[in-house]
Structure formats: structure tokens, C-alpha cells
Amino acid sequence: MFSTERLVLRAYDEALDLVSLWKAMNDIEYRTMLGNASLLPWAKEEVRKKFFSSESIYNPMLPALAICVKPETSVEEDSNKHPSELPAIGHIGLLAGRYDPKNRVAMLGVGIMDTKDRGKGYGREAITFMLEYGFMELNIHRIELIVYAFNESAARLYRSIGFIDEGIARKNYFKSGVWHDTINMAVLEEEWWEIRKTNNVRVMPAHLQ
Image 1 (cartoon, helix red, strand yellow):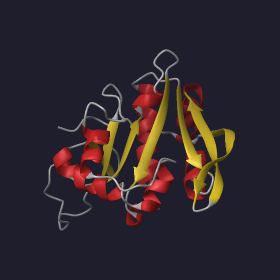
Image 2 (cartoon, one colour; image 1 turned 30 degrees about the vertical axis):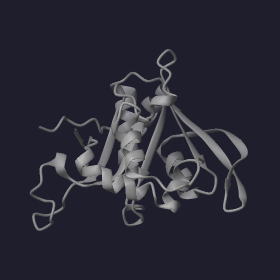
Image 3 (tube, one colour; image 1 turned 60 degrees about the vertical axis):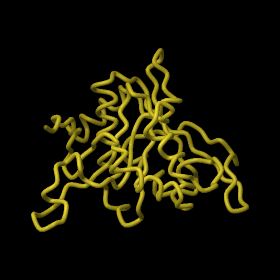
Image 4 (cartoon, one colour; image 1 turned 90 degrees about the vertical axis):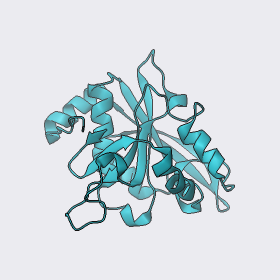
């Protein structure tokens, strides 16, 4: 697992994460931000297959991490837990089905599950870590993502981190009776080198014991 300033990024654990992921994947608002598939309810077995089985959306050779917040004080309920036992507030990873090893291209997937944990900079911290890890450790050349145009706060966040708009798929997502555009974004490794120098990014952490 890894540690950043405020976060622990650990491997998924079915015993710890199945229920929270199942609840998130049955939250319609959250699901609409993740993808344009059917919004039908998910059974726990579907979540288990998607995140914990050999059919997972993540590649075992690529990072797939639960995002956890470090306890701030010794008074907090989670303060005495080992970091591997902290509850997840979100997830981040490089998606298996969109990985191109020949051209060193990966697709980023990220989500903060509960509204109370959004707007606090946790997504920025986790994404910055994943870009640093992808470019500096995995030797990836290009990291892509998509964001729906109605998700303006996420689009602003990605641009502020360094993602560049590369194109728009017009009206390819139907939501609540309205067609929405999808924005394609990416960061190249040489761009990340410049971002690191300009912003003094140094987030590669030590492995936790």
C-alpha cells in the first residue's frame, strides 16, 4: 500500500470493501458519473465479479487501489487501525480493458463514493499520486480519461491537475431525457515532467509496512 499526505492507498479487500462498493454502485447519482451503462441495480455478486474476481475491470499488473483517509487525531475511531484496515472513501486505478502495453497507454478510473467526502481535495491527491506512479514507476507514456460534460467540477479538477482536452464525443450519453457530450482528456509523460518541475510535485511515497 501507499501513503500520501492525507491518504492511504491500499489494495481492495473484499471483506472491507464489498458492502461500500455495492452501496456506491446502487447510488444513481454516483453511477451516472462513472459510465453510460444501464443504471439497473447491482447485486453484491455483480460487484464481487467486477472488483474482486478474475473478471475484474482492473488488470492485476496495474494499480487498483482503495482510497482511504488517514485519521487526523488519536480520538478518531479509526486511529488505532492498521492502514490496511481503514475504510475506503473511493477508488482509483488504471483500467484493464483500456490498457495498451505496446503504446504504453492507460485509462484512469477514479471515484469518491460519498458526497460528504467530495470537494476536500482527496480526488486531486489520489489522481496526482496515480499520475506520478504511472509515469515514474510503470513507464506509461499516456494516461487518458473521459468525463461527461455535465460533470463540470470534475472536468475543472482534471484540467487543473494537467489533463488536456483532446476532443468531444457529441451527445453520446443519454441521461434523464437529455443527450450529453463526453470530453476526452489525456496527459503525456513529457507533460507530466513539466508539471512536476513547475509545481514541485514529489508524491512518490514509501511502501507502508
